[in-house]
Image (cartoon, rainbow, N blue to C red):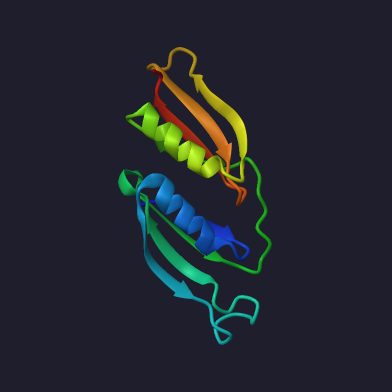
Length: 133
């Protein structure tokens, strides 16, 4: 099983709540840094967390003092069976983020789907795919 692990510089808990809400999931597990396990800057922050994303699976995440560097090498992809649900989740992650590409029909030989790309306020890129209706 491959599980994405996202790193944050202090905003992990906020991100997890947003992702759980957007995908109809919940935070299953959180362990926290202490001054014994990390620095005083990390104390109380998320060391490791496990979040269910409803029908979309799970992801793990944590805060780190190592600078998080963003690029375009990896994106999170969520496939929806329903365009309304896809647009609602995309709108939730768009809050405070940026629209990279609005929902657009995929070109042939695609099976009739469309997708949008959102960069959330934490810097992660999400691709939302759904039927083109």
